[in-house]
Image (cartoon, rainbow over the protein chains, first blue to last red):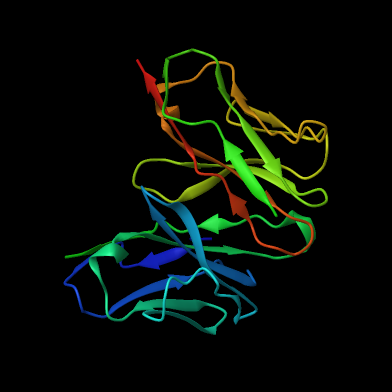
Length: 115
Length: 112
């Protein structure tokens, strides 16, 4: 299996622009997670989906952030409009949720820089 | 609530030194416990896990034992290598259906 795939790996944009991050989870996994990592705040869970349905988006910082999962093999995280404070590494992770045996597998991350 | 506490980093060791990174947790019930490792420029990778009390997880020379009585899951390695330089995250997965909780991470630097 190729693992969790994220694109782009790096993104540099200007403040006010729309940014779309993409994720392809591991085939067969039924849960998908979006995390943000910064030096100041560490690893933060933004949102997670179970069977393509958003379950908990309480970590989404504000309305500028939105996430979708139109099918089991694809998810997007969109920031519109972007701001410099959104600069971070964004990770997607997937898992097969079954009792306590669940293990999350992370993608390589998208490094976002908003100028 | 559920939380994970890790020792403050960075930790700097010489090659072949003994490593301990402390991790303690607070959780309702009996969670599963994990150590993830993040190498520079990469995502988090599962290093080892334990799903019940007294279980020992091990991988690549690293070990951690699930201690319910002390609510701890300390990571150890007998002889570290330069290639072990990374950030290590302790995490828990509650049994009540809630999500993973990650610690803040501990940066390890191993010098030749």
